[in-house]
Amino acid sequence: MKKHFLTFFATLTLGVITYAQSGFNIGGSIGFPVNDSQFDFTFGFTVDANYLFELNPIVALGPATGYGHGFGDSYYVGPFVGNIEVEDYQYVPVALAGRIKLNSRLVTGADLGYAIAVSDIDDGGFYFRPMIGFNLNERFQLNANYVGISDYYYWSTVNLGFSINL
Image (cartoon, rainbow, N blue to C red; front, side, top):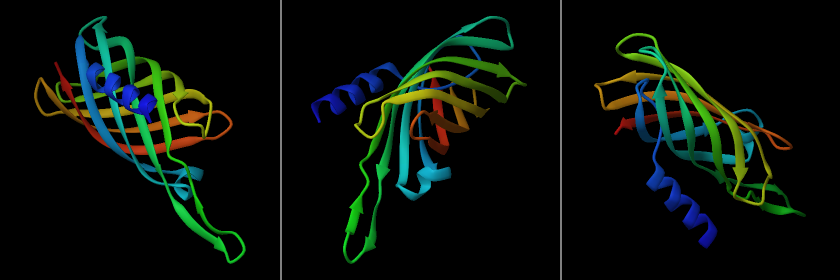
């Protein structure tokens, strides 16, 4: 538990997602499992951070990290087995974030890297996170994204969230 708390605290101090402009971005989102994950998990949340370097007025790249948590479900298998409790899934992504400014309001991009599993349910795997964002102003953004982690177990969620450009 101490390891989970320290990981979560470190992630919160580091920050979250996008605005296609140079600088530090923090944010968060809630997600709903899709594919095989939807049968084992109820919902999840992410806290993310990145620091983007503007390559030109349209494209920005930089490092990204965060914390993701999927809440395990429980279900009844039968009279001989009873209830099965699925363990929560936690991961810390280490990725490269890329953003493309489509116009003054719309941003698209993706994070690509590796997700380090914090829980015992998996060892981690290839991490990808395509996103689209709508800038409310220069500091705040609403966004939708998809998180996929592929390895032995495939984790995927569709997320709705926000980010703040600091």
